[in-house]
Amino acid sequence: MSQENLELTRRGVDAHNRRDLDAFAALCTADVEWCPSMAGAIDGTSYTGRDGMERYFEHYDETFDGFRVEVDEYRAVGDRVLALGRLEATGRGSGIPVSTPMGAVSEFRDGKMSRTRIYLDQAEALRAAASE
Image (cartoon, rainbow, N blue to C red; front, top):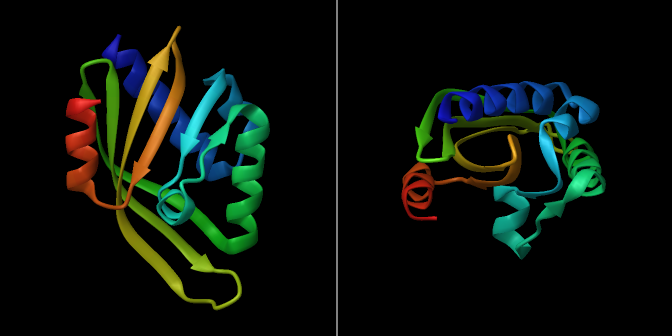
């Protein structure tokens, strides 16, 4: 199961970076929960289901140019997948580049992603992957 989850996560990152909502949604459960680091750190925002993912993409595309996830390493941690890398973007209004470390922990149900939580602290993501 972990190899399938690793591949599913890789495909999810690719669909995310292409802003291909249809491809991304096909990899997720209907009630997928997406908990981004930046919005989540400010007000606890998370996005649920396809409609939520559409709002997520719209929100980040309004705020940033070229918002991308660059993953350096994928790890299977039990039934979860830990992705370690960087968030890369440019502020839409300011033109200021953003590059910050990140870690993401994805959970799966019925062969699809059911929840992903993104952390700006890789050590926190490692702890979460091991304990959630």
